[in-house]
Amino acid sequence: MIRLLISDDSAFMRIAIRKMVESEPDIEVVGEAKTGQMCVEMARALNPDVITMDVEMPVMDGLEATRRIAALGLPSRVIMLSLHDLPAYVREALGAGASGYVLKDASIAELRGAVSQVMAGQSVIPLGLINAVMRGGEREPRPAEVLSTLTQREREVLDLVAEGLTNKEIARQLAVSPATVKDRKSTRLNSSH
Image (cartoon, rainbow, N blue to C red; front, side, top):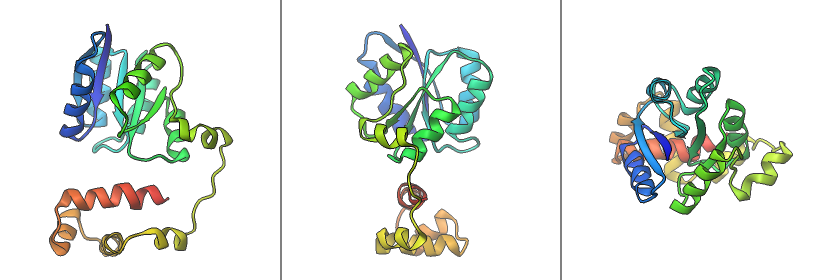
């Protein structure tokens, strides 16, 4: 039986991952953490075989939590879950001690395969990113290039972030939900650098 700890600040994602693996007869979810700090504490207490770790979490992000778990010498294998399909993110996750990197839109078969591979001592990297990760070199886009790829709404969010507004203030001003603002900032603005 593979003992799995799920770590993600989104209750929706924790439930989704749990539902994805519940049908697997050899995987048992032993806990759920909503912050990196909570994940480190639970990993120490529960000693899971595998941890699915969100990259971006409050209190302590997934990269730092992975570093701390590795520093503790725990045998748990970490699979980093992310929205970002950038080679630099994959390299950073592997450098922090993760055994794998899986995109959040992965199917149950892909997630199950990743769990099996890391349990067998292998690393897991999305197929489309392997060559870029191995090359190690990717040119950072220039600010003008990044700005030219943003939608009008993303530019509005960026302008309001630059003014120092919080997600709630930006949401109020643009008449959208704070979750929409957070999504725009994390999936486009953060992935552009």
